[in-house]
Image (cartoon, rainbow, N blue to C red):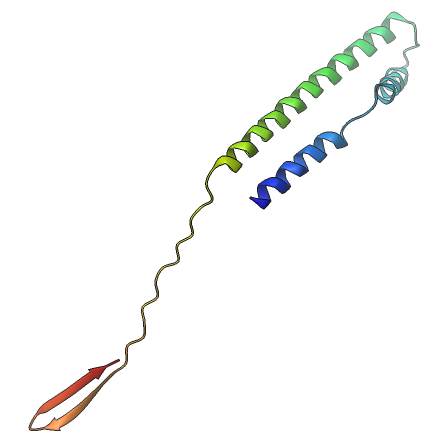
Amino acid sequence: MIAVRLGLLALLLLGLANCASPAEIAARQDATCQSYGLVPGSPGYAECRMRLAQMQHEDNMQRRAALSQALMNAGDAMSQPAPVIVTPATNPTINCTTQGMGGGMTSTSCH
């Protein structure tokens, strides 16, 4: 149960760690398009920005779907009963002693 909660927390933190503000995303996309030699305001630059925005949107949708699935899996795992651990019974040690009683007879006692 604790492992499931820790896994859930890790997934949530991972999802939040990849967040960037719209200004940060725009700056990164601007720098990428300009690194290709495209000039802001040109048709090529506008197309570059639109493609990067579409890729960002698709990436976000995939992350959300993966996080949603992970949360559903964690919920399913938490709703399952805890496994019952059965330890096998150990056989007790039995000590036996045999003594001769004479006349070909013996006596065996075990405890």
